[in-house]
Length: 628
Ligand code: ADP
Ligand code: MG
Image (cartoon, rainbow, N blue to C red):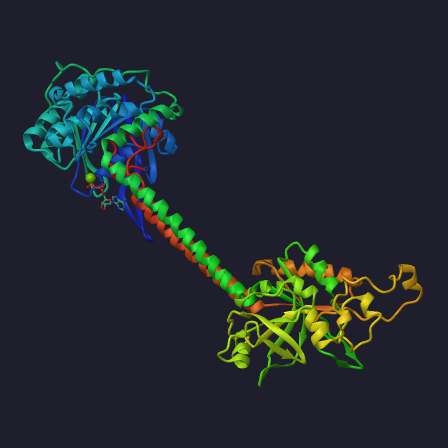
């Protein structure tokens, strides 16, 4: 009765665009209990054929039946079950586990067995198998303490421990001397005769082939001849004791039982104990690797944040809101022509726009600053609230910033930039000194940190900032602060001290009621601002911040749908784009470095051995080069 049947099996390997045919139409049958030798020169395709017979590889075309079951179309899992239960493998270089006793090497397939034999049973069974191959006195020896012949016997004991129907031996005597070769071949003959084990020996050696019942000769991927050997060395050895049956249940069990966690853990621990030093070093490598990746991510994250802050300090997350222009008789007023932004608008932005971190209203001023006998036309003079410094991310280097109390009290104080300090005070310390701006004395309470030129090349340190109310009412004095005060004061009299505390002093007359105001409308000037500066926190928030600001201001200014905005929003697109590009590069760089780390890590740390019962693919005696 036949065990193996091959019909016109072809196998070719693809190299680039080239197909290399290795097997070119092999047809073959092997009967149960036959001892066959597969002979041919090196490169004739013997190993390739054996891999197909052993269900390790699939033919490119042709059909293959093993034990009546067609394999050529079987799935990888089905082939794994067949390999585990029906086939034993023996290889030229033994493939025993180093630092593992002969006994543990031989019993290893039982750990993978779906029959789950107990520890004691597998031990006894492995002992019997080693006795059978003549190694009763070498059970505790590790491979390094065994001769080549003894190692090959251990490998044979291992391949037979699950009592397979087919034993495939690829050049099993290739590394052995002639005497050991003879011993080993006699042992294989014995197993064949007493157990009815079907054996296929792959060899290029005629003297080895003579021990078989039939010799199949291959050349260039085809079978060129087959028949019994001319000078047979087949000896009848029927007196030898038979193979003991494997322990546990029959070996055609359910492979899902393989997922036995306890067994897996036991095997894993055994494997770790086997190589304590290597395990420790591997763990150390993994720990160092992970720590390095985490450290790198953190360092990268930190530098990314610091770059972000540096760019943000340029004003990347800042938005400037101006009143819109107005055209009178076809002549445009330019920026800020209409007085549409008020202190109340700024307050509404602060309370209603969730994305904004800081809101700073400001008014502009121009003028000559004078100290002693020196004077300087300051590049930019601003009346603002202390939030302006937060929006611009501008620290006070010496002295202290002014406060909201100074704003409420229109205090005669100011902060100056480095250029102003140098021009007006030279080597003197400006702190506590009083400079004069348009006839008003302002005490210098602090000096701003150096900012240098902006992207347009303007010197940002040529700057003076004072409380908003001070500039608006005491220095320029042209515009009014609140409606209640504004209604009773004439334009141009802004320097009057009576206008300084608009919200704190009770009005002389009771305020108008809503109906009075409707009946007798009075000409009221807006409590206008020249700019509102807002900080969105991060350049990424800018689009949302613009949407929120627009919605709030349009609502407050009662603009109909479709009507143009009566304000202009300016963001720092150029700086934001620089920021976006920088953070993109930084993120990609980190990603690549982290990936390289992981690839190197995985390459070196990945286990190069099977993972025990969870591995359904590899028969235990498969060489590492073929583990998958
Ligand atoms: P042998 O008879 O010596 O065991 P093999 O079956 O190992 O020969 O190889 C037969 C031919 O197939 C050789 O020429 C070899 O180079 C080629 N070969 C084997 N495996 C591969 C592969 N994975 N890819 C490409 N060519 C292969
Ligand atoms: Mg070979």
